[in-house]
Length: 365
Image (cartoon, rainbow, N blue to C red; front, top):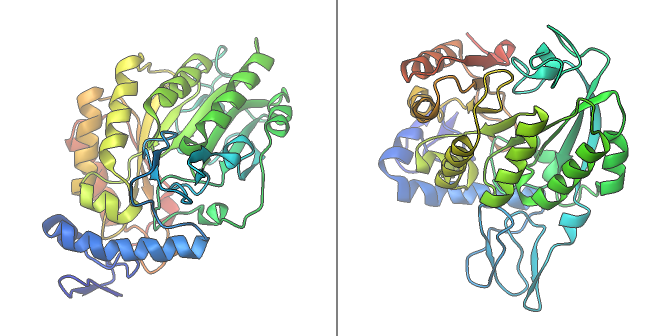
């Protein structure tokens, strides 16, 4: 049970880490975001991360945040620093993170249509016809850095500054060369702040696997440097992989309260990718997902996101994901069946035709 520090309402659908209710975020955004910002500072301290840069100094440009980092300061991701008037990126060359082999079919946001789980695109993009690639693997790359600050993050522990795990390029390539590996998926954290490392690894892995099935996939918040994102999209498109955008909310104040990010960059990036590539049907190349956070991501948020997607292409796959309490928002309940059904109906009403509900076992009555 949480209390909104703006209007005073007490409800099980108000998280104390956010500190405000959905209605106040929409109707009194400036006041509400000042409260929510305090929750993000607490979250970052818990992970050993620096506070967000306040502006001034050198512009990074590595991702879509375009942090301006003052002398002696660090970027939002914690990897880039301003040392004696120049930007130093030691974590980008040997980034924090780890990789593991995940047997097909995997628990992937795109598993309901991807080649690894369904055989879609056989024989060019899948080794299996009409079903999962059993006996084969996805190389899951979990980066230990992110350029958002989601208070509900389910991989929050990989972002701890003291995690100590490194992901050298050679070690990653050695695993990618295994012929039983049919795809690599970069997530985390997020690959956006580590795009140089991820793109180089992808290019070298594809070269070494020329003539075999090897897909490059991304699961991202979309807060990328535009040019690097288009290169990542190109690698996925050519290899039969999938670019998965996690569209967290539509209302700017809601998005910022939950993530400390700007949704305009994300939605503009999505639209730009969609305009540059043929949105093939089998296997789909571009998809989106939204986590149904109780009390914050309601049917309105979903309908607006779905309307944006439908305005591009009504057949863009859209996954609605059930929420389970985690990290700083462990005081919320799981997604209810009613919330999930209302979200599905909202997405259909907006015009989308390919909608999927993920993690339905988490739903409460």
